[in-house]
Image (cartoon, rainbow, N blue to C red):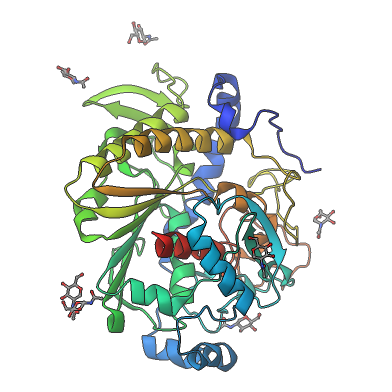
Length: 441
Ligand SMILES: *[C@@H]1O[C@H](CO)[C@@H](O)[C@H](O)[C@H]1NC(C)=O
Ligand SMILES: *[C@@H]1O[C@H](CO)[C@@H](O)[C@H](O)[C@H]1NC(C)=O
Ligand SMILES: *[C@@H]1O[C@H](CO)[C@@H](O)[C@H](O)[C@H]1NC(C)=O
Ligand SMILES: *[C@@H]1O[C@H](CO)[C@@H](O)[C@H](O)[C@H]1NC(C)=O
Ligand SMILES: *[C@@H]1O[C@H](CO)[C@@H](O)[C@H](O)[C@H]1NC(C)=O
Ligand SMILES: *[C@@H]1O[C@H](CO)[C@@H](O)[C@H](O)[C@H]1NC(C)=O
Ligand SMILES: *[C@@H]1O[C@H](CO)[C@@H](O)[C@H](O)[C@H]1NC(C)=O
């Protein structure tokens, strides 16, 4: 059994409990965790090697690309008749919950590799970095009540003609967008048309489809003053403006589709501002401020976000992604925690840690509230990837966030990443689900 704090009540009932003690306890180590891990964010992205679309095309593995070229129709590459039948079935069956199911073996494997996709961030390029096992690549998410077809890049790009899709959030959103870029590049390589100074926000264009894909780095989604250098070393507390949404809102009108999510950064030490005054903080001993808890801040921010979508004059489809679990075992990131499993869990073999449960509880509650108001303007949908991702302890880079970590010393002590996902890897299935949600929409 995995070392996890067990919650007998399900995640849904969690919000009814009072978690002050738990909260403080976990926040102490998580402050550290979040500082280091999520700040890989900053320095890693700038080291991505940009290749021209031409090079990208040349690099495509012949086997994989001929597969796709061979199919002229929009049929799902690699899918068989039965899957297509079930595909028809799924569209009629509104009841299918895409987020309840299990991981099943899938011999067809990923549609891209480290060779065919050159935008994989070095820290997530597990193949290239020398991860020895490859079993984690041969699973697909199988919802209990229906078949989930593999992502169909042709069909997706067709649907996205003249449209714009933005991923808004932290480094997990970037992890996610890179998966999408890799899948789509099998049909048309993207051309990067913008990046910010730190290479954290980017815009790509798929010219022959007139499709614009963006990623916006805004780890808190609200305005924040972050005093950390590129190595994640903090020089002062984060100042967080809970009632002031970050600048992504200025661009919202440009987007037809949005995938938004966050969470983990709220575990950091922060001073909270509301209505132009300091109202409290999270984990700031010695400051004589009220400890409001990260849950307070996260809930407040989600309320602001849903209010913004509902009140905007712009009409868009917004997928709200729930928090992503990490899989450190026998320690945390700073105390030798690792994630060396090579197969997925079955349902019931693992339980969410408290902070993830608390976060997802808040997310579900605030989403439900927002969705029940039924704004005419926003088509708000839940992308509830938490539980299916929880079942994939095998999908993280672990020590292979660095190139050949054990080349010099087989017993080298290296930092593990049990939070982000290898590419290719389980996060690709998040896109299978998005495809399904948008096709059905
Ligand atoms: C199609 O879905 C049904 C349930 O809706 C399932 O029983 C059947 O096994 C599925 N077919 C395939 C090929 O997976
Ligand atoms: C891809 O990964 C393999 C190992 O799986 C490695 O030999 C190869 O150099 C990598 N290619 C690139 C372009 O990173
Ligand atoms: C895309 O935009 C062009 C130019 O405005 C238009 O001719 C075309 O019909 C549009 N296609 C779709 C699918 O909206
Ligand atoms: C591209 O799409 C935009 C809408 O997003 C449209 O205004 C423009 O005309 C399109 N351009 C072409 C060349 O189709
Ligand atoms: C914000 O603060 C001002 C005074 O600084 C007060 O008049 C106002 O009621 C406050 N608004 C809210 C929403 O708390
Ligand atoms: C803490 O703040 C309260 C009210 O804001 C004040 O009354 C108290 O004197 C402060 N304590 C210290 C030690 O500064
Ligand atoms: C994971 O690492 C631990 C500690 O080094 C070891 O005991 C265990 O056998 C490893 N598990 C796998 C699946 O490699």
